[in-house]
Image (cartoon, rainbow, N blue to C red; front, side, top):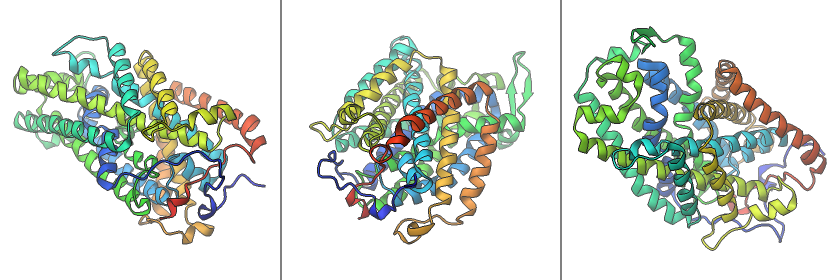
Length: 465
């Protein structure tokens, strides 16, 4: 027996005692609202992008634009694989089916790193944007947001789609206000977007090198990373063969615009290079308008961060639920994580990702950023490998959305992502590599010897519709 999974059309849940299946309850609109909320464009703009301004200055918009173009190729891979294997397991179900169980297990570990780290990274930004009303410690505020998001994640998915939809409107308004004010107070022309300058320690302009832009692409990929949430929701999307691809591509397009347009406006509207590199967007908004507008935008961002936390907890709990259903752990652990609550949500898995996320709010932020960037890049790399294998054997004839320019798109993506990985800081590569090595040992000594009863990646029977 090999470690390659059965063909997709035969890989179904048939055992009478198998865990309950998630309910198909949302369409493209609900799925897009949830997925956009996971990308959390406004909170990403206000929490993650300021760090890019600090290291890349006027090259930030260019770097995000390049990252968004790369994400189109990534989205093609997700769309094709997500319609072939519509599973709550997301990346690991897709990669396991196409590239083998070990590759799928490693992608699961990388995705688990991402889904555990990203919510606290975003949540810790809440304190900065509540400052006009109340002063809080960033770690304490982030932990509170994570716990609140965990409670909301226990509700029905349809209810959360409406909650996050309302919050999403507010964060889009905040991003639009920033864009309008930035363009209205422009200090420099469009040419500044290509000037590649950052304020140095002495206040003078330093040149941003091409290598620094390449190294920043790992974080730029992370900026729009949440579009992949659509594949995690594929077991709860109606007509997944059609709607997964629509949700993935629509989310990437919308989120890229919501993030990139304000970044361009901020770059052109900052009073000088020092202010831009400082990345204090709230102060810029206040300077461009007045304190009332600044407070409004800050509160909208705070709500956007809470919104992101809710959706990320929803996404992450589905990953853990699916891993338990697919027998990734000792049986007592599998039984606990696969439990569904009265609202149809995996309540134990929700608590298992939300509470540790609150604790991670007390970890050094730079380390969280670095490990996340490496993990996202590595995960995309393995997904691209799986997409390269998606049209062999029986998969060639399976009804699914098919990307244009295959196999050129996944091949180029593999080359580019491998190069981006090679340019990351050694300490973050070592952290991520060490965790991956430990996961490989778990595979070698626990999962592989029990390959008939463990890590049995499957898709729901009704996923063929």
